[in-house]
Image 1 (spheres, rainbow, N blue to C red):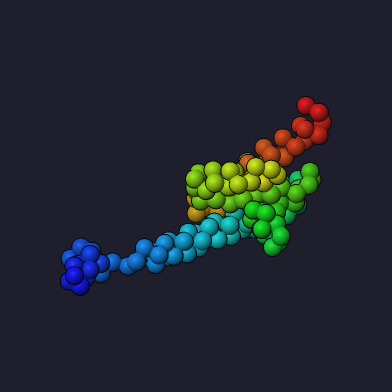
Image 2 (spheres, rainbow, N blue to C red):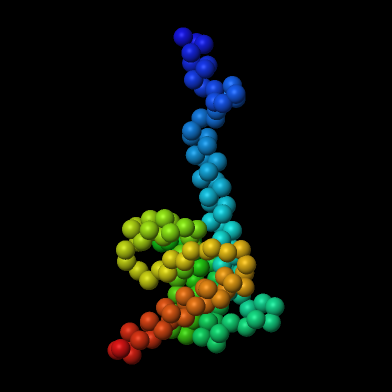
Length: 142
């Protein structure tokens, strides 16, 4: 019986397999690190650096406070129409999960799909511009 248990716990070539909970923890930690890096990249891309000014309507972008983060916000973008809230995701699956949980509110989910901060900046500004225009249209009664 003991020999049978030992055999079951071994993977290919007799190498012992890690228990699933350890693998789950490793993958969860890795996923959190990737998410944190994407949040940092998104925030850095929205800073007025290297002679690249932000549009006049975008005043600043800051990390969410603890309370805002608890409500699913990663980045707060201060604009001429008020605050725009960003939730940074790594996949469409993550966006679907987020939207299923956060049905109310005006949090903009955004999927980071590049490591190039210039491209990320352009894409984020495009998305933020659309949201700003939507808010302006609502306020003007269109």
